Length: 429
Image (cartoon, rainbow, N blue to C red):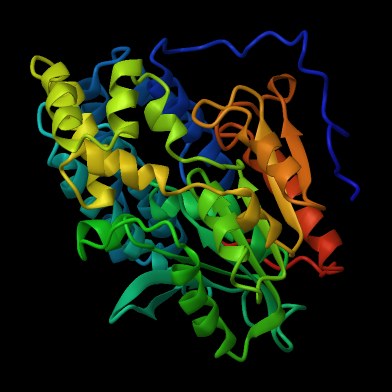
């Protein structure tokens, strides 16, 4: 591959880290994510910087206030633009309002009112849906049959009459992570796909977005049971090239995607950003040895009792723990840890991955350090692409390097699928 291991990346060994605004790692990551999202019109740099001026490092209430207030103002601005027939301006403001509501929602666990995780998410989704019909062509709201119910999602395609409009198109399935909003899927592949003449589809899988908040569906380790219905649904469409379906996952989907393609063989190529071999490592990193022993010995009662005792005088941290457990459908820490441990790619599973697999490997990966290389070593023929601090592309899922990330990922996809198509209008045109 043209973008193989460690080529075309600047040396990061001597590069100093970017200057930080926050010492709190979560706040700093979200700051970079918001600034990076401006590349796709999901935020605006000036209003983000202004909102951040009102945020106190590590203070969730100040973050929620700053970004929910900004979101409310933009939502009202979008409504006014729409009522006066200014469609493009309305769409832009709805998208930015959606991003800021999502950011405020993500800060709500551990705050004075953790229930805002859901109420602000609903406002995020409402603003997103207000933008959906204003695209040209409109983004389709879709329902994918799944296990006696449906998975809700969105289908993006290039404008009618574009150079790629004749016949079926390559299609990328965008698999979100454990807690990302739907707007993340625009910046992590939907916009890049559409401007290259591809279709893109995203969905709320079990434990994600609407499936969690509205349907109470929860994570599962056998993710092929989720992806196969999505592929079934896609192959029934006449505008999908069934020989060029790509599966792309970010964050925790760095586990789900390799797991799915080990068993679902209709996927032509896959991307894991980053590679995740053991989901539970991010949970267990700070677990005391005594607690790990209780977990290993399957001592549920003692594990739950001792862990909850440690949070007795830490209500904010307890709220965050409950938020992390919610997508697993349990209020038992032991059960959540066990469920996370079940998301593990063993050597046998990795040996069944036969489609081309791209694995991103950013410097300073916070949650699963070293696992991108581990997955690369475990999957024969896979490609690992580094993203470095010197490029401003470090941290989990390259939050501040949206353009560079799109270029590398889609160049690789076009090469492995032998697809070079004329450019089509951007998603928001």
